[in-house]
Image (cartoon, rainbow, N blue to C red):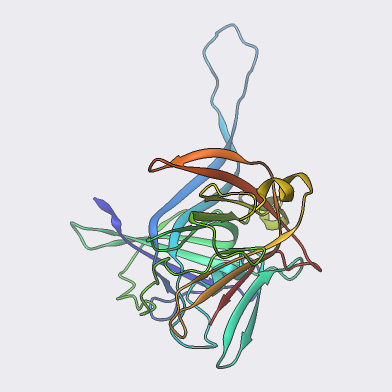
Length: 315
């Protein structure tokens, strides 16, 4: 029997795409929630014309592995030191800029996308034996979720090359990032420099297009995965206000680009500032939160000068 809670996730950047980077429990353990490893394959129907109506054996075509999990949004605890999720962000098409002793900043990139090797260990509780899911060449996307009074989270989805799981010996005890995640509170949410809006949640979906490279020479018929595009968007839900306080309709009709930002945490090494310089509103719907009239507002993120539609800064 395997328990869903007793799992270990490791992630490490690859120096060569698709080549196992050998993540270790001492250096590359990721605190994660709700880890799922899904083996996907095309089912090839063989609809042959015969005297019998009974179906023929189906075959399996292209194969890949999809891994989903959620991570708490937190810093390393040290200024200028990348967080444990840094390699994951880079494998979602972000570039990393480290300012020694000051900050680590992630912004989207259009070239030079990194990949990671993911290890997921499961322990069989009766025997103490382990099973390893090894996924190389993994690239992905994420959804950022922030809610008042909650821990901010990143919901990751990765796709990588197919390999069957194997039975292995114990990987040993994992060492995790020691920082405690900040709670989304006193977060200075601003839209167009207005910090007076009462907002319960802000979500941003990076929406990367993670596409397969079909290849008849590869064992799983897929040579790898490429981030071919992104369409970042999000939602937020402010309480309804007078137009004199904020004119959402003027922004919507005029497709006016506004800067949006939020700060999660305040401690040195565990403060995360999220900025989108060019946000446009898609529509304005009404909602209700505890008897209070609200607006449910979807929005899109656009570039300023390019590869800058979203910035995540750890400081």
